[in-house]
Amino acid sequence: MIVKDTNVPTMLEHGGTCRSWFFFHKEELRDETEGGYLEFIDEFELAAGAALEPHSHDTDEFYYLLTGTAVMRVGDEEQEVSPGNLIRIPRNEIHSIRAQGDEGFRALAFAISYMPRDRVGYTAYPTDGEPHFVPVGTDKLESES
Image (cartoon, rainbow, N blue to C red; front, side):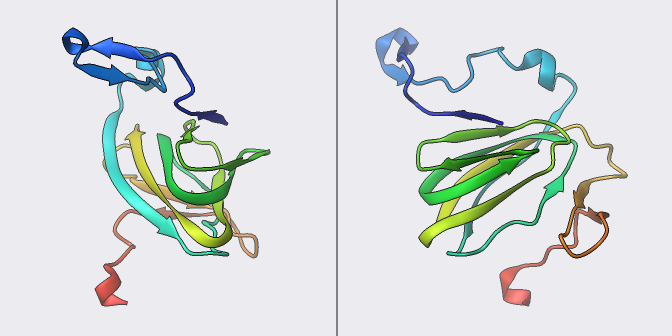
């Protein structure tokens, strides 16, 4: 698991008008992400006590915590994360995240995918069942619930 925060030297860009804190420097991930595409960018939340079930997918995924605290698990590694932390989840790593504390959390997420058009989705690893593929399109709008 790679967790970074803005405790890095600032870079002045665009003629000194823009102060930047690079989690990953320009071109740093080119070799690892070449041939991928931007699958999504979203903001998500988990309520207090909630957790995503362990799952994996052929993407490089990133979570940036906005509010609250959580415990992130990637492979066998677990780490508490808080606002300002960026978590990189490498391709095909089994991962999950659970809310810590009484308030839940909100995070920004985005992913660079390598999935072919005919196999977009993720593999779920439920604690009480067999691993299985969940194709994209199985989620529904909250208003449809």
